[in-house]
Length: 250
Picture (cartoon, helix red, strand yellow):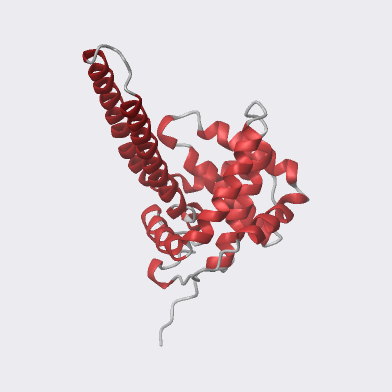
């Protein structure tokens, strides 16, 4: 069933970061290893093709499994391949996320290397003796520059948080899911940012263990987003696929 984009309501300042993480863990605790396996395989499949072409369907199916678990519906590992039912819409959402990131990152690296090369040229023309003030100023500019880039990428990540759950739960098109995700995420921005920063730190801590450890904490982050989604939107109404009513001659 499809839900009209402009009729879906959402709550403001509804996300409770710590509660989302705790409830997320409780959500997957009884099937923890199933979610670890689905997450690991899903991310590996999604990474096979560049530009996240397969990552969108894999993200959709992870949230599909989480939302089914919230509804106390059974899931199995084979659910992973239902993600391709959302291929078109998830691809649109993924590209709408990745393309702006590329537009930010690629020029940033070009600017950085041009600036760095110019600094080296200026240093060589000055006899090669580093000026402490100039050196400090250079590194200060670099830190501020990459900090701005990082903030922009984080903001993009925040506003796309609900795109995949909306595609799965409300059957929105990729474009409408992104539009609604942006609106809802901005209405819950700081709380959502806090939650994503905490789960990001957990993922970073897991990655320190030869990267493999990240797969053990990623399901908690996804589950936290699923809980946040429920806090903001509630769960969409699930209706069985009934046959259409008979035609009326009145």
